[in-house]
Amino acid sequence: MKLLSIFSALRCVAALLAFTLPAMAQQATREKGGLDATGPYRVVENWFKPGVENWNQPVTGVAVDNPNRIFVVSSGQQITEPGSLILGPDGATLNPVRNFTPPPILNPTHEHLILVLNADGKVVEDWSQWNNDVMLPHSVVLDPRDRERHVWVVDREGDQILKFTNDGKKLVLRIGEKGVPGTDHSHFNWPSSLFIMPDGSFYVTDGYHNTRVVKFDKNGKYLMEWGTKGNGPGQFILIHDIAVDAQHRIYVADRGNNRVQIFREDGTFLDQWPNIPNPSHFLMMRDGTLWLVSGAGNRIAKFDLNGKLITYWGMYGRGPGNFDDPHTIDVDSAGNLYVVEVFNNRVEKFVPRESADKTRLVGKKFILRGGLK
Image (cartoon, rainbow, N blue to C red):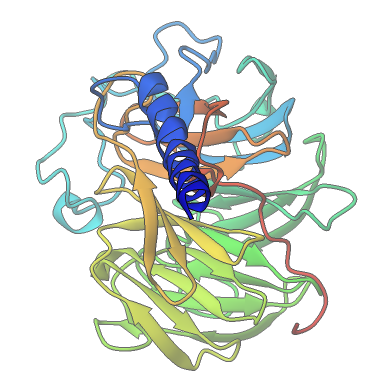
């Protein structure tokens, strides 16, 4: 009995050590202080190198072709100082963080609208050949199933959707009429984003003034639409982005109402996630979660598909790794994260930390394929 007691005591000591030693080791390696501003990532300081002296124009969209080919779109307006440009006629409505009248733009430009960056953040292509065709590109989208890797640009103030070859040499599709707003089947009024389905059809968020979601077939033929202005189910104040999950549920960023709404493919309302300040952009992930950008919150947040918040990070500021109205995010095959910020006038690159909690990394993007799963 005495021998058994000794063995029992030794087992308890071993179990205690097995629990406490890893915890002690973790505490020993954990840095003191900090506010988790960049979460599981480290920022690559001064990564964005536009090659323009005194670059001072808002960056609005990013889409990764591969880790050495990153598309970026910009408003092309040199402004008086960071934070002085309002992306809309009513700052209080379109960007509740900044309720003020912006100063006049000094020396406005209309260039550097569509750029291609390499892995070091340097501009390797400037699609200046399209400057006369584009007014203010709001987002850029690539279809991961498209072997030709066409580049889609949503020209907000141009009221049009443009589809280019990957090298930028040809415009292969235009929907809408440049600078001519409308509410019919062939016009937009400040569209914001789009999502491409496996069959080539696509949804456009005609979101700033028309507050509707419009669906087209792969050739750009109008199919259907839904949405009116308001705060009820299926109504919107400002639609900013759209995503689709494996069950073909449509997630719509109702930015003006500070919520996410969810629909069937035919526009039937299913659910909403309230109290999300200024939802700007989505990334649907392979693990069945959704990353969401909160522009007003200066935060990137991870949700399950029932709307439960899992984790988040991000902090307002001007310094490396901070945000001032993050607008769009994308991730490359190496796990690097790219964030564009409207009022910091830049795109930042975040690299996963070696010790990162993988559940807090953005991870692998979900690619919708075929029919319902």
